[in-house]
Amino acid sequence: MFELSLMCPEDRIEAVSDALDALDALSVSVEDADAQTDAEQALFGEPGMPPPKDGWQRSRVVALFATEAAARDAQQLLTVQDFFAGCQVLGLATVPEQDWVRLTQSQFAPVDITPDFWIVPTWHELPAQALRSIRLDPGLAFGTGTHPTTRMCLRWIARHGAASAEAGNPLGRVLDYGCGSGILAIGAAKFGATDIDAVDIDPAAVESTVQNAQANGVQVQAGLPDKALGTYHTVLANILATPLKVLAPLLCAHVASGGHLVLAGILERQAQELQEAYAPWIRLEVADAEDGWILMTGSR
Ligand SMILES: C[S@@+](CC[C@H](N)C(=O)[O-])C[C@H]1O[C@@H](n2cnc3c(N)ncnc32)[C@H](O)[C@@H]1O
Image (cartoon, rainbow, N blue to C red):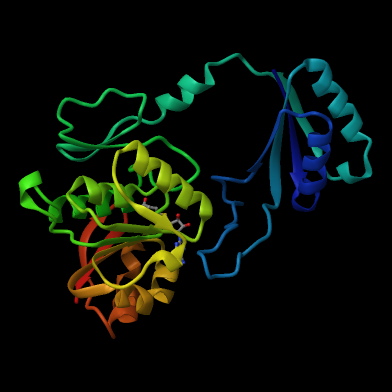
């Protein structure tokens, strides 16, 4: 295969990408050309905040073609178009043949949450010490067990869940709010929970949760946020500080008397603003910390 690399200013990206599609590019990727430099600018704000910018000021556009002839034709046709003004051809190169599946898989290794609780991709053998595990492959939804926020929630589940099958169900009825891949809901099931609702505003996350729960042989009722009904002994929400503050009354209303609220997606410096937002209902404490992120928990 051959790749054609271009540099484009913000206002040309759409026209150039559409043209590359029309010229039979197999794929077109757009990356921030100023990433990791002093010129890098924030593109996305947190949910609920206005985005600081609509696009990068300069993008590197890479189009993949099946043959060298197709890549050269595309280059020639593009460079004479009006909309290409301000853009630049960076080069045309052969892409070495690779086993892409193997390459992708090699980037996801088993992750240990506790010494005997592991997240293991389906293509890996279970580590011998994994007495409990979640089988999960990277997909469209967030939550593979590698992010500190997910890991801290899973550690909390492991600490508070059933140590053995005989220990019953200390987590009680569970709500996973913002379930992504469903990893927390599945984790709760692995530690004895049997009545679990998992909700997300993203339908792709709901679908992913259904599939991942099935693959792990556990029961989880997944749906959009209106599927969360009544009170729960354990409410888990790994979202981000801004939406967590907006959701404070709703999440607290779902926590049963004597139940637990477990919040993640919060940076260390955001602890106090979260405490203030939840103070009318629940007193939050910092329960765990990893890589600048904190876990905040409270009881009713
Ligand atoms: C950081 S991911 C967490 C995924 C998973 N629970 C984990 O711990 O790895 C946050 C998820 O929350 C969802 N989300 C964001 N805002 C939400 C809201 N207001 N209501 C419900 N879900 C929301 C996103 O779609 C995303 O799937």
